[in-house]
Image (cartoon, rainbow, N blue to C red; front, side, top):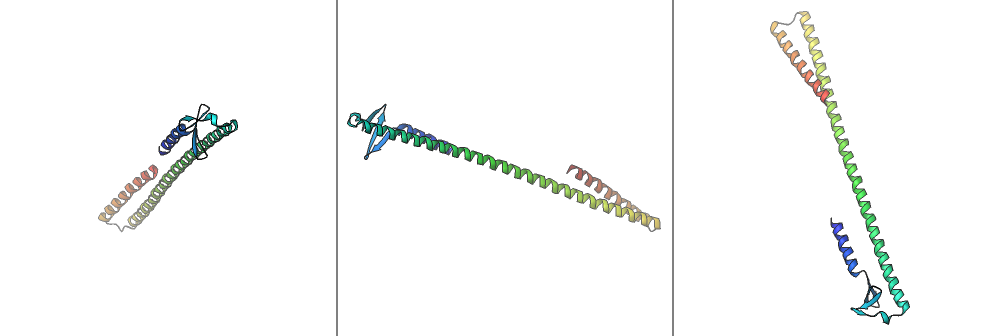
Length: 165
C-alpha cells in the first residue's frame, strides 16, 4: 500500500513538472511547443538549435522517467514473486511438520501397542503356567483373570489408537 501511494505521488508530481527544464540556472516550462520563463513566452528568444536542444532534453528526461518507472515495475514484480516463493516455502514447511508429527504419533501408538501386547502375552503365559502347576488359589486366580482382562482392554484401546493415528 505504501509503495502504491508513493507511485501515485511520483506520477502526480511528474505530470505537474514533467515539462520543466533547467538551463543556465533558469527553469523553463514547455507547453504545446512554446517555451515559458516565469509564465512569459520566451520562445522567440531562442534559436532553432536551442529550441531543438531543449526539446531533446525534454525527451531525454521523459525517457529517463519511463525507464525509471519500468525498473520500479520490474522490482515490484520481483518482490511479488519473492513473496509468493516465501509463502510456498512456509506452507511446505508446515506440511512437513504436520507429517512428522503424525508419524511420531503413529510410531508412539505402535510402540505402546507392542509393549502392551507383549505384557498381555507374558501375563497369560505366567497365568497358564501357574494354573497348570496348581499353585493358584481361587483368590489369586480371580486376581490374575482381572489383570488379564484389564490388559486385554488396554491392548484393544491401544489397537484403536494405532489405527486412528
